[in-house]
Image 1 (cartoon, rainbow, N blue to C red):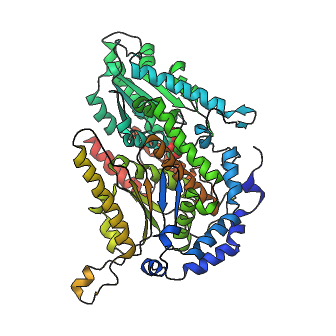
Image 2: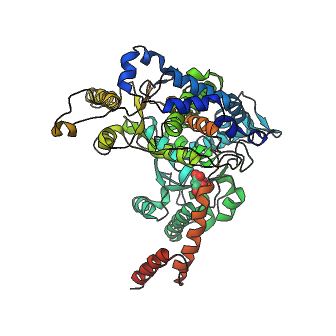
Image 3: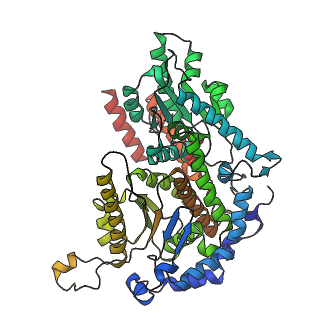
Length: 554
Ligand code: F6P
């Protein structure tokens, strides 16, 4: 671990000075009318597509031509993208501000792989951790884990936030068809306790296990929810049997990089699942943080998820850039943001099972690439990460598509759909029709967004209200079917997309210093609220505090 790539050269200056950057800037000044691009190039859809195991990507509706694509590929070379990919996968300290690797890809290496970092056999460590996950998950699933009154577990509550919540939440909801247990999983993240309150009202403390998921085991949101859950359990157990220690042991599991903090909180050593500093929070669902996934869908399916992600890692590492899905997706995002000046990006899954994917990607992309200085602290003079949001596509059609079709903003879009029929035992024929309907809408919307109806007569005022200007660039990703394997590949695709963008911009996607100051200021404000002390902040904050304090004193 070896060299610190980003310190040894000036990659940002190198990229900005490259011929490819200049070419892209010049190309971006041209208009890119999708309708004309399709009219003059009938082979466009055949050329601007790429495949990986279980995935097909059509990017022909992006505002590009061969020249743009070539310049983007040249830019990737100017930024030494292949060396950066190799650095990521081999465990170099690509997280330069925290001086550590970002080795989420090691979490899904097969047992037979070799990866030794600083004399540590990473693959062996990962396999041992997975075995522990399997052991705990199996005890809960098979009913040999018992609550304080001797009953088997019926409910598991994951208490975590950000990467310790969104990944397992998204995967368990997406793969609910694979759930093969009656044990329900719940996710609680909100600091204010309202979510937890709601969940606790419905649960029996005798049969509930809490998983306290926190990489740092110091996040106030998580610890405050955990404290409330502990109080709830102690109150219920007091009138029955069991010491506090045995209640803690039978009802709390901790997942963290900080064993000492878990112990200090009261997590029994046997219930501690550990992972490593080199796993970023938003890249951690593949680690022990995925325990709820393993409980709900079983370890074999969890391993399939890992295998799908590994297939994408291999594709990313070995496929020529012109056919490499994450590289293409990342380069197109750079083109849209840094050159075409498009500030917003939306993710639109046409499959309700992927409803939590947009939130997951919001953290993955914006917390990673919402940066404005390079690894070496140079100020970046162009757009980096766009604002990202999303929703189930068909619901979004009835909510914000109006803006996509007729608003003033250019927005790039990712359409995501599954080819295989969604099918369940009951009403399967009707569900199959619904699946086709969703697919039809997915294709129809990307078509209207691309081509609009600009060519139609729009002379009258009334017609102008019905004008669709088109030219919203989009990529369509088709999964063969939604399975643990394909979902793993899809998530890894986006992880690597993020890394490609960061590599071109020379930003560190693995730190998040921008969240720290708010936490510190909140601590001071909390002190004022808790002690009902006079406030000494800015005039607005003081006035708000005064209003709150006066109201609360009534
Ligand atoms: O505050 C941001 C953040 O650190 C995220 O990066 C992370 O996923 C989340 O908080 C939760 O952190 P932890 O897992 O340490 O509780």
